[in-house]
Amino acid sequence: MGFFTIHHADPSCSARTGELELPHGKFATPVFMPVGTNGTVKALSRDDLEEIGFGIILANTYHLYLRPGTGVIGAAGGLHNFTGWRANFLTDSGGFQVFSLAPFRKITEEGALFRSHIDGSSHFLSPEKVVDIQTTLGSDIQMALDICTGWGTPDGEAAEALKLTARWLGRARRSWDLVREAGTYRGLLFGIVQGGFCPQLRRQSAELTIAQDTPGIAIGGLSVGEPHEVFADILSHTAALLPDDKPRYVMGIGTPRYILEAIANGIDMFDCVVPTREGRNGRAYTRRGSLSVKKAENLVDFSPIDEECGCKVCRTYSRAYLRHLFKTQEILCSMLLSYHNLYFLHTLVKEAREAISENRFRSFSESFLSACQEGVHG
Image 1 (cartoon, rainbow, N blue to C red):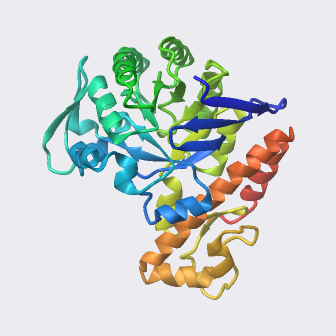
Image 2: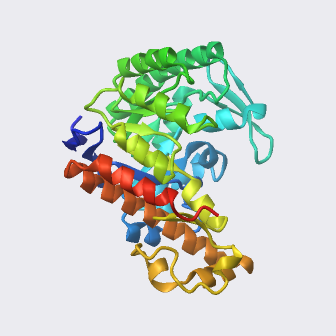
Image 3: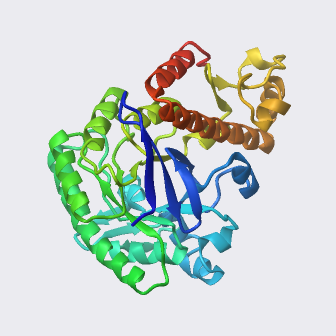
């Protein structure tokens, strides 16, 4: 479809650089996407995100469907007009909420019946309805409805979930084809590979997903409680099964270690709520590891969060002041630490792209992680 271009592959691993061109602009890959669940990245403004340089953020179909509702967003002319965000939106399908809100839902061949976590009202999401919702949102990339299985799920249950996910993807693909043919929607559809933590099931799911020929493919069902070594093994196995000429997206990873692991395996896109959640809880990423600003050792420490970071937070505020903000429960602390963490990851991924283009990604990654492991983890 001409929207994804691969620029360079590092011969030392599977890492690669590229470019995605979507309805609301181009951006370089690999790319980290901040999560804006309710149409906003928590504690950051649109201007903050543009200033850092993000070309795409993620919003949550399930939450926006429940509140404010597609009627409101549709009346606004779509999610871009509603929020004022001028770059791209990827919207997830609600599949993860089907997973995480298990006590409130029932899965059938037709879709997912669930009770709202807000008011207990009953709702039904089918693959077709999820396409329709995301079309109303005006998503630049929309995800097909899937069933995510967690760590510890029996292989038999994971097998049934991946088969149903594949059947749902076929229905989503047909609905997406129809809205595209109508000429009023230009967004793309990505399928999602599931299969739990069984390599054979992952292969089966990948084959079924590839057969639907969606513009891009996501790897779901990772970072759901499994040990890192299991994550790494299944990620490597699954990524190797996917087509080289399509963007690959791993859902729900947002720490330096996991991001660099994904890039080494040829992943082009990733997202996570962790960077802003950590910021709201007083934790900051640094090149010497994670820093907890609330610790007593920061009481009279007037150095920045990270001496090597060029963000406006590190240029302006000290650890002592940030600790004061956290201890007095000032909203500004969440805003500043969330900004820093997203700037930090954006810079990390930018540096990773530069390293790939110079065929030194492996050494870059090893050096970065080694420095982190030697640093602050309090």
